[in-house]
Picture 1 (cartoon, rainbow, N blue to C red):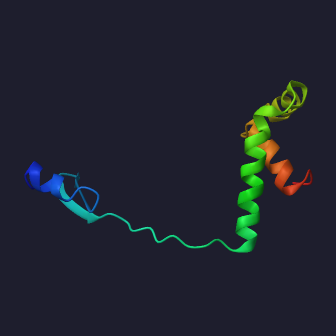
Picture 2 (cartoon, rainbow, N blue to C red):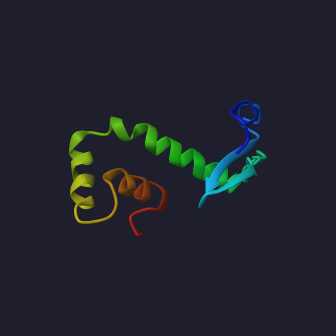
Length: 90
């Protein structure tokens, strides 16, 4: 492996690591932002909205979602989001 000051000089550009005892280096991925489609934007807004108001729901509604989640791999909030975005026929 290179000396620490060399590794530090590449911080955020190159990742140095060992794999099965072999020194390796790889370039960090580059993210190119893009504008979401209208459909993606609508889904993002719906997802953000339901997650924002979830904590404000009355306790009896949250309790029902908790009960529905028992014995499933989902949390109450997963079920809430699914019901809000896809309706109850999921």
